[in-house]
Image 1 (cartoon, rainbow, N blue to C red):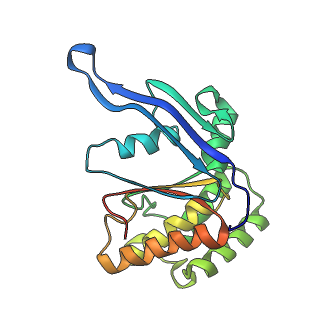
Image 2: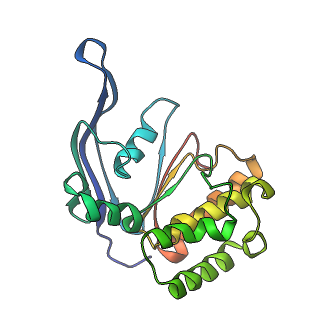
Amino acid sequence: MKGEQRMSILKIESLCKYYGNKKNETKALDGISLEVQTGEFLGIMGSSGSGKSTLLNCVASVIRPTGGQILVNGTDIRSLKGAELSDYRGRQIGYLFQNFELLENLTGRENILLPLALHKYEEKKGEQKLKELAAYLEIQDVLDKFPTQMSGGQKQRIAIARALATDPKVLLCDEATSALDPTTTASILDLLKDLNQKLGVTVVVITHQMS
């Protein structure tokens, strides 16, 4: 990505998320502002309870903020409804969860193809995307296994493939290595950096520490 002009892909302005009433109010986010450029790798570090996951969940439209703006490619996501909101969640944002969140009754292959089916991708196109991701992430040998038959690192690689299947503009990673051992954690972080540097995926990672 060196030498390329970068543009703002994600801009957060004065973002707030409050819980409870004024007498017993908890401020999970209180006026957060930040900007992420296309192709950037951004790490957000903080202690447990500091609002990191709340921030990502607001960007992913999982929860609605109390105030402020979240602009993705210049569009305020709070204005999206119906099909536009579904398209945003499925095609603009990829989400990598702390505990993988794979469906236990589906194989690795089926977990990866699920978002493609939900967003009505052509079957042939989906199979080609699966083939490319499986080769890149080196998960060909676990595609037909169920999550209970996989190691933690294999589960997270399947989860990464699922998150990238629809070619999202931004990959959000919520403590994506906290359930892994140190060696596997280093491997997954290296993989995320590689996705960013070689494929140009914009990555936002929240974590306790960045190695």
